[in-house]
Image 1: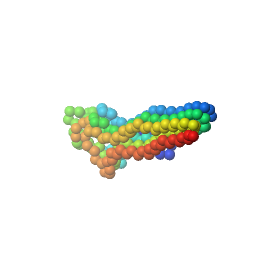
Image 2 (image 1 turned 90 degrees about the vertical axis):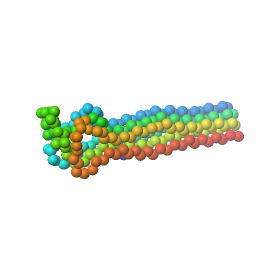
Image 3 (image 1 turned 45 degrees about the vertical axis):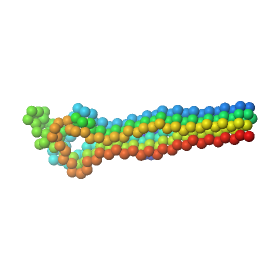
Image 4 (image 1 turned 60 degrees about the vertical axis):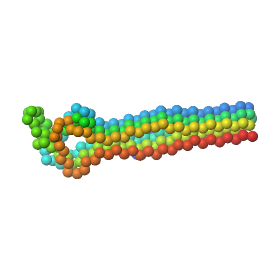
Length: 220
């Protein structure tokens, strides 16, 4: 199991800038924020891994679970709205750029071998005559799940005032999320599972993204 944050306490990354200008003949104020953030949460049984379940053959209370969950909050702000009035030219610029990425992966890769304790003992004793079908893996459930939740806020704000007033504003978001749950093929042919309840392979991503670019200009 690999978990980053929670629904009530998310992993947080914030970048902000604040700018403005005071009174004068020419007023120039610019706030620029470039926010680069990346989160990676992975729970993986890799190819070649040998996993031995120590429950007795025929017992069905054992669970096989591989879970990865990531909860993030990214916030990018640029605020150049706090400027006074310039008597001549007023220029206020607010630019907020967010470049973010998230990977959430829960996988049992191809080539992972899962044994019952009895099956592993039989294989070790005589690999050449071992019959995997005679030693199924008894489980109550199999769950492989990747869960992702993101709140992503990008705000750009700017204002200017003067005889001539210029206010460029930009909010730009470049983002990607890779959320994957995978159950591969067994490492030994004919190894089988006997599952009394559900087999769940689930990938879920929820993203709340808010973007705003607000500008105001006052001239005379």
